[in-house]
Length: 334
Ligand SMILES: C[S@@+](CC[C@H](N)C(=O)[O-])C[C@H]1O[C@@H](n2cnc3c(N)ncnc32)[C@H](O)[C@@H]1O
Image 1 (cartoon, rainbow, N blue to C red):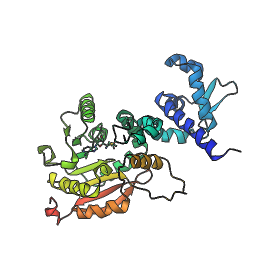
Image 2: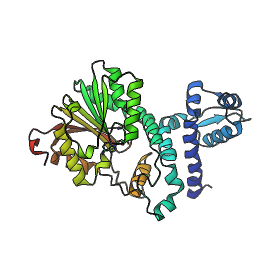
Image 3: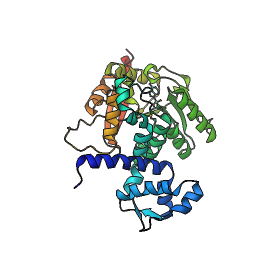
Image 4: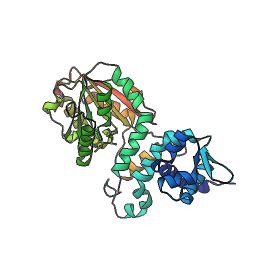
């Protein structure tokens, strides 16, 4: 009989193995090739077959892969599709927050719970976000953007600028501007834009959304979007000020698609969906408040935005809020 502590112990190794299998290219290989000769794959990729076999054996115990009796080959198991779709969440947790998970007690003891203090790894957070974003966010984003015609858009907290580049690839007359506070992310976004040959159509400005003011690049922006950074603007008075100044900084804005993960408020005896516990645990630990959906909806009106509706994403407790500048919001800059 397996008790709960056994299940938790084994799950920790399972989570680490899914993240590693994603990062090492094993999950993609199984997805594309169907079946792997473990030794041949390891020779081709210069990896020790006993190490790769150990990871595959853990995945087999969860039904993510199946191995033959000699454990020489592996193929997708009955639950492979689950692990393949969710692999970005595992990378997010085990690599993005790996340092925190390993050093939890000392980080708490030393009051070192800032983003830098916990050693959050932005590179892996961005890599993971690209993967789960493609599965669980982009289809909803595309549908929401297609609802209202536009040519010029801006992305607040644009990260790698991937969302702007996607729009530029899909729409030949599109122009976009990203706003990003992190210098590393700005450099990465500019490199990506250059590599895509889109410098004449997509730009990034280095700015903190908390203190946003009009820039000439914002003049023609018709649609604004902002994904997965809104909670960074809280506590509420700061966020209210930011949402008011955003409204003022874009003079020709028609629409603001604001998206974030909100607080689940699930009781402690209820099972949490994937991602939610990791998201709430890491932010609680840093003392970063996560607003509920009601708190967001309450703020929009006060900040000078009409709230037109909410489209759920496929990430639990996450949505796109469709906002329009309110007609009576001319005093919104106070
Ligand atoms: C979780 S990432 C999301 C990136 C991208 N929007 C996406 O959906 O993949 C949050 C991004 O917002 C940026 N960010 C956070 N606070 C910001 C602020 N006050 N002003 C501008 N950018 C900010 C971070 O540097 C990071 O690149």
